[in-house]
Length: 186
Image: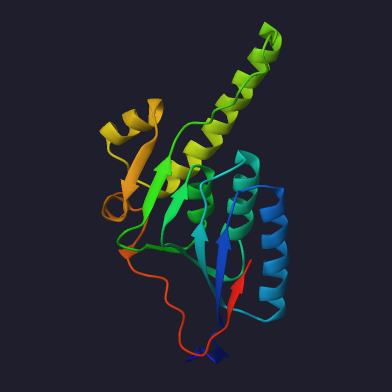
């Protein structure tokens, strides 16, 4: 803890792993309730996730990016798919040297024998999800034209060094908990 502008900084260290889904949303909401009750000024969150549901990831991005708590996100392994959107909610973002990121367009599987009108609805939903996630991605990351082309048709994988180059992270740095501090699993 250090004194700044007549207030004491309170830091907390957290891990968040698993699928981005309604259960993760509930866990994050509960954890943030505890953070505010504990009067944290900064939350350091290690994220490990291969993705999940677009709407849940966007909900978490919108919620976390507007907190009255400074959010610092870390990737020490893999942050992929909609979890990248969640990761981008951090005001400061870091990745370990061996960490990887992956972004891609939305996808879905239609039921066998699906009618054209049902398929049309699925396609409209996928396009809407892609517009939402790409808007967030473009707001934080400066991919090259070549990387945007890969993203348009395939999975785009980024090393920590590449993530640094495009502004996804501000430095290559490990998640390190100060000795004697508590780690909370969300």
